[in-house]
Image (tube, rainbow, N blue to C red):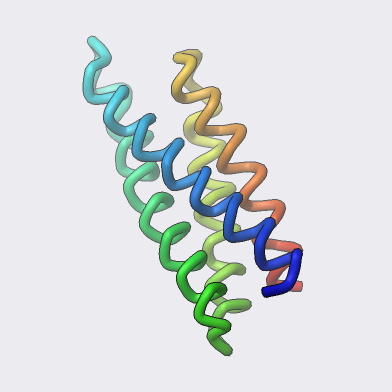
Amino acid sequence: MSEQYKKCIEACYLCAAACDNCAASCLEEKNLEMMRECIRMDMQCANICRLAAQFMALKSESAKQLCQLCAEICQKCGDECGKHQHDHCQACSKACHHCAEQCRQMAA
């Protein structure tokens, strides 16, 4: 497996874990209504990240297209999480933006 694949797969799994943690932590916040979009994006992002990582590991011919879509969703999720000051949201935003960058490189 190429070094580029490894870096992107790792970024995808780290992002998925950050998104899962963020969603679970958001559910414990007092103003749940304010966190609704963050939770929704976290769930979508975690799923596409895991799928993209799996497709890369399988050396699928569709991996590049999936990485392009993953990059778009990670960017949106990172932007949404970045709006919130909670530590879990800020950590998630950072992981999402890093993953988006790795996926864009992979898709190029």
